[in-house]
Each structure stands twice: as structure tokens, then as C-alpha cells.
Amino acid sequence: QVQLVESGGGLVQPGGSLRLSCAASGISFSIFAMGWYRQAPGKERELVATITSGGSTNYADSVKGRFTVSRDNAKNTVYLQMNSLKPEDTAVYYCNAQRTFGYWGQGTQVTVSS
Image (cartoon, rainbow, N blue to C red; front, side, top):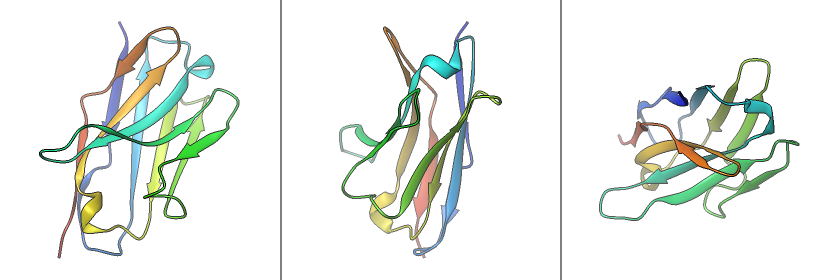
């Protein structure tokens, strides 16, 4: 059974930082491309960042220079370090594992507000 479990969300002030984690089980983690997506109220889910099995990364323009995606294959975990957070980063953040099939986590809420 495939499970992706996100953690690390919460409430943070503008300019603050959070680190999201996504722990995977039930898949050969190292061969999967991993990604972070987000969905704000009333909006469609959008890509935030991806990291390939080889470690190549890709970011949405809105988060470039502020967010960093990384992975630890020994821990079957992908991370999203989020710095200089803005109110418009408020959303539910979802972890994705992609190969032939795609898998999703349940999401973790990130709220950026003073």
C-alpha cells in the first residue's frame, strides 16, 4: 500500500520559514520523481517544485529563490524548505510521487498571516 504523509505545515508570519516533509512508503522511492503542489481556496492545484530521481529540480516562477526542494533517499523523504513566505503562499500543500502512476498525499495546510 502506497502512503505519502506530509508534515510541517502550520501558521507562520509573513517573511517566516517552514519546512515541509513527505515520508513515502510502499514505493521504490529512489526511482520516483517527487513533487510539491499546492491548492489555495477557490483555485486549481498548481505545481510548486519537483525533483527527479537524479536530483534535478524545477520550480514555479512564484517560488524561485525562496523555496528549495530536496530528497533523502535513505529516509524515503522529500522536503520543501520555504523561506520569505508571503500571504499568497497560503494553501494546502500536497506531495506527489510520479512514475508510471502518480500518488498523492493527504495534504498539509500552510497559512501565512500576521
